[in-house]
Each structure stands twice: as C-alpha cells, then as structure tokens.
Length: 113
Image (tube, rainbow, N blue to C red):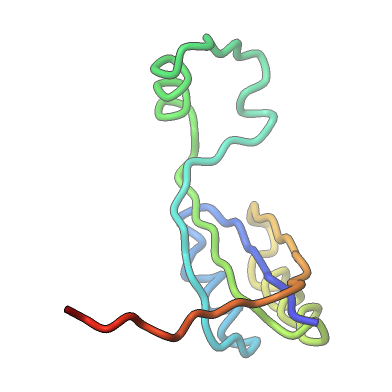
C-alpha cells in the first residue's frame, strides 16, 4: 500500500525537513504554505463570526508554516519518519500518514484547437 506522508513544519525548518526527506530517499514532493495555529495559540480567543474578523485574527496571530507532502511505499514510511524525527529533534513538527486507496491519473490530454 502507498502512504501519503504529510510533514508540517515551521517555515525556518523547511530546509532541514527537506534534507531529512531526501536523505531518506523520497523521490518527489509538493509543498503548501499555510498559516498555522496550535490550540495553545488560540486559547482564550473568541473569534467573531464575521469572516473579516476571523481572517484578521488569523493574519495577526498565526505562524507561517509549510506542509511537505510525498507518497511512499508503506514499508518505507517508518524509516522516512525516523529521519525527520532525528533531524528535527527539539523543533515543532507534525507528521501524518494517510493510506492511499486509489490513484487516478488522467494522462490523456484533449487536442489543442
């Protein structure tokens, strides 16, 4: 089975995390930038329910972070995770493994007109 491995890191640890993943043998990845907040960050906040207030609160109080995603064979996931854990020891990160049930890749492109 294949695993969708997701590694959340703070922006300043992107290089460390990428080096750990490539050293462990990943062959491809994609990266998403996001604004992150942990429960201790928003503890005590009351967010007004209008969208502008919520967006302003996120902009003002969240941390810039990165989500690095890759697909790996299940048998390789533990070694890759260990590489990330060893490299990011003492840093904040989150790793999520999601089993992949199916891939659908459309490689037939319509004719250009």
